[in-house]
Length: 297
Length: 235
Image (cartoon, rainbow over all chains, first blue to last red):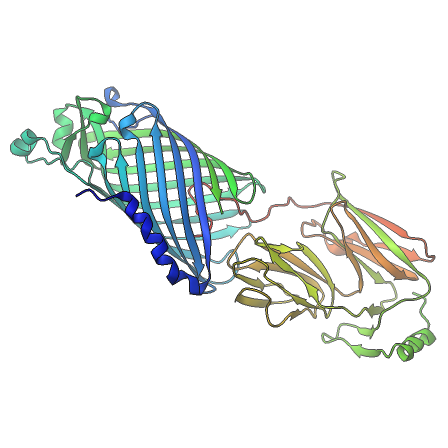
């Protein structure tokens, strides 16, 4: 039975009565972004690499409640819409719920803080085979080191579960390889720093180490198939393409510039380089450029 | 300052004032509304190194003979509006009590670590029950433990004669009694010591006196409130 992803949003109002006695504040985070990815299929071989540009829209209304002087709770409903310029089957509507608890250890803006967060989102692609649930749980901490310098980082676990598994019978019967190519799990460690150049400009650096499964796309390739533990047809990139799941270690480096337009809005430009090393000397690299207008209230 | 003993006694009797030592033992003070026959305004103007007017500079006039007359202060107020302290810089005389009304529909948690006054008003909305009294001269930096971008300053003056510059960099200390004064200025971004800005002025007539400062200021970098990509502001 296909659950309606919109059902999630009904959970939010039902949670509100619990927040009201401790003074809740409404939140709204929204974004409009243009993102260029020079290796959309996470391909390893040149012949499989495809680039594309996407338009992204994010909208997260929610509430924030200061439970005590040091601890706060935030819950939001998250809507994300992605529209690819070329690979339309990857057009996505994501709808979900995020909850987090943040604690500050002391008084003042340089006091360290910690946050635990969890989210669940339903991903609905134009290519129905990618549809499914995405879950994330994280614990992170941060501190303002100097007047203009803040750092934060933490651990994040990600789990993605496709709603339907379409296996290729020949691969199942001959090699025992199933079609769960879009079921992935990964552990992430990240560290970030923001340096405030002036009242408008901030420079943001980030590094993520990700250990876990990735989904990549290729033409029929025996060597790659041998290294994979799940394979499915991937019609999003063409009738002769296959999506495969493989374990990989990924290093992701990012640098961004954020221009504050006012107290609630900023224009952000971020460059990300990531490379993944998998078994059998397979490697993947991506360059991403994202220009994003953020509004937060 | 030419204030005779007779004049002091006259004021003490006619205005039912009291001579008292302030709680910090800082100075011998007369508590009265001072309105001598000879008084003039002091007009101050403050610019930075680029000749741009400097707002929120506190100009303080201290009698050269060291005598300080404390004007009776009503309670002062520093509001919290749209998650900002309003005004950004508030000047008060020593001994003044300040109320911190929260005019937002969310709660704030106001604090200060400053030597001149350490205090904390835990999570509250509306007007806190008790105002905070500032008994030691100096600069008090204000913050909110919930909204880290909120920063404000209270300048606690040992003298009752002070003013804060407006957006044009202008301030007027009204009704400065006749006499010689050391006048200095302070600003949150001041690069040099407050004492090094000191100038002298002699109030001899009822005509306004004028002083001008060119201040060397640090870059105005305040805690950022706008969102940053990949970061959440609130949580």
